[in-house]
Image (cartoon, rainbow, N blue to C red):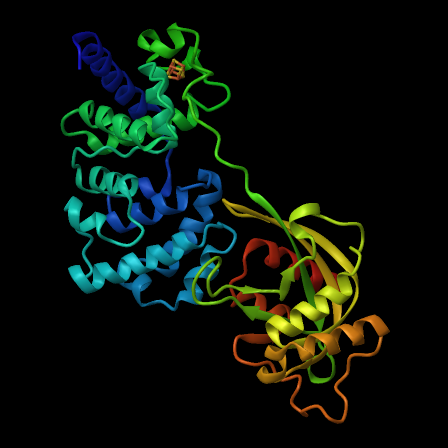
Length: 408
Ligand code: SF4
């Protein structure tokens, strides 16, 4: 670092720490230096605002006060407590990491960078945050806030979406950590980014490092950091069904559990299929042409479930980092579960389509198994009372809560 930059860095660290000492928010994870608590908070805070995280964090800590409690909990319960925070792989990885800490380190979070970084779900940012905040080690913790603040203060014009720029900022951040105050310094930079040097409207006039901020001096603070745009999520139209039970399942609806791996693994959902011409048209007219047929056929072929859609009930959206589900939700009458053989041949699909087109009632006939309404493994008939124990992605949680509220 040249001498100007060294001076600017020293000024930055000292002014910032003074400011942080006077202005830091009282957040629940700042009340002690327990590495497990810091780990949980940092994972929850990824992609999520502080005020949203606080109640989740407090509930999570009440239920899983130590890493052993988390490691030993059923995954379903962890997902349920995470419900609404989104990005559920974070919760699964956190629990997998906790189990590794118990197995490999006797339940003690390691203070060694290599061992910590080898744990599931711990990337450079989380490792840096735990090492600096819990153990006082001089490791940088560079997230979006930190990249923005440092890009502006030092007038860095590299594209922060590129790994090379991130690596450069990490080196810079490491070089300016003041001795003995790594944890406070990292939190102070994040706090400045969250409260003052915000993305759209940096509050430069209130900023403790205004005097030496190169980005502000050049009038470029709003242009920085340079960040190439990520591709927007691809829209995908899907059709879901609220299948209403009858007889002993009256008042209940059918849900299924997602596969063990991939998107939203092992969470519960309403049955759904890709809509016809999904890529081209997103949401369709109400209802989309051929919807009933496509739904009946798709569910029969993919899931061995015969239903008769009755009408379009709602539309909803769920955004992942790479896909945007646009979901049309249909109410449907339950028919029966087909046996696996007929479902896989596609014969069931034709039968379902005929039933849907003809508007025929979808009850099982005399040639159907008497237990045709008994759900196979991975499916359940649920009522409102079950919403407290099963974990759903936000979109299905909202839809089911709406449905049960309207029926009450
Ligand atoms: S002076 Fe403005 S741009 Fe510079 S660090 Fe402070 S808030 Fe950010």
